[in-house]
Length: 314
Image (tube, rainbow, N blue to C red; front, side, top):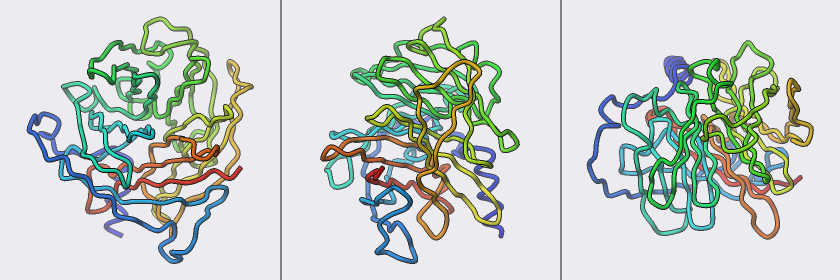
């Protein structure tokens, strides 16, 4: 019971990190280890959960103390980029590839000024969504320089610990950004931007997102067919963390409308599940592959950084 209480506090209050950690400029070896994990700890042969077929999963560790708190994810053939809610942009190899971890600071200052929760990577750039600040920053992945930053007017009223929780870029260059919302609200706020949200004065329309009852959206990604796949998380003292994966048709988004989704997978014990906060989609052999990562809240005694890979069988 004590562990469950501590875990609940960590999830409700957000990421824990030693106060001096963001200020360190030391060099680390940057080693990384991927330890395989089963989909179901009571049935190691299990390979499916809903419409997701398990391709592999790993508990990920690094000797760099800045590694952890992963809240957003982008996977590509040449490696992984993740954003940490302690203010780091983290690059690492794919499981089975050689390489080391490379970590750069998104910005100096207080955690609440660089609390990254969502990310879009496209054409050599990374857009980072920050809660608390309710801002969007755009970075060059070539030189690490911040190119643009904005605090969109329609995000200013979002609660401090729920802003910019999920973000995706549509094929035409528009962006969707979702507030995490709250446990007592059926819907959460969302915005459709007419262009780059890191540029000031980009027009946006407000709509609502309805997660599964009792859940909150923690990240979303675009599928090759234009639909949205989303992570929705819940914590209960009686069950711990559970996650619902949903698919949404984005073609009908309009001002003041509510976007809903269809549940395709449910994660709860005894499945391997943790504080899933990042999702990315790649393609293999013509099919969509879904990657999910968890935020360990910089608390390795109780939580893990899990990276899990699935084929979408839709």
